[in-house]
Length: 288
Image 1 (tube, rainbow, N blue to C red):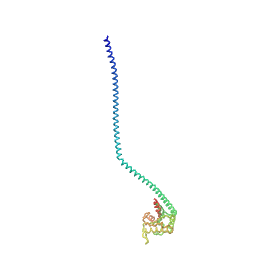
Image 2: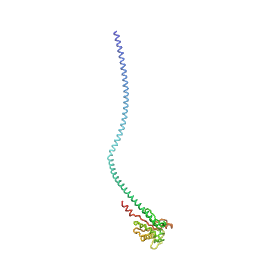
Image 3: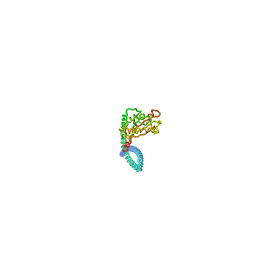
């Protein structure tokens, strides 16, 4: 009886021990599986971390290269700092000097511009006076043939051309009575402008002058004709001789060809030139 109980107790113990060991084994196996999975995850995390570390290392290397390049530039700038600073200081001095020079130049330009405007105004005023004088001369002379007398303005100078056919007989320097009347009308207008200065020019054609013994050539004839006109303007019409110049131009300033009678007739003329008042113009220039 005791033997049976003992065997029964032993078998029960073995059975119970087997059950307990199987549970522990399964639990241990589950834990191992869990640890294996955790280890695999940790290994993946470690690889990812290593990859990031390598990428960061590359970035750090690139940044370090940039830093090194910038440091080299900084060193270069430091080395050239003094030279650059001196150059900038020199430029500053030059700029100040140039600025003052430019200011003076601008002031001068402004003054010159005013001066030029004044000159232009004076010239415009002179031109208007010349035109008024021309109109007065034409009005005083009347409707005379332009072939015998011509009045024009050229470059601010008034020219009165009177043909020798009207003034003189052929080969003579004695003024005709008809011409004296014309000269009187011209003198009337000129006398109203007491400050005017003018020149009387004698002109001839190129034909050889059949001269009396006391005249050599066309030079002499042109001068004699000019002085004949001047004397009449002075003695008969009272023009101030201090404002008159007599000149002979001979055959050397023709207005037409001497190969035709018409051309030679045009060249035989006496010209009254209203001279520009240069003294007033120079006084205007002296103001600046």
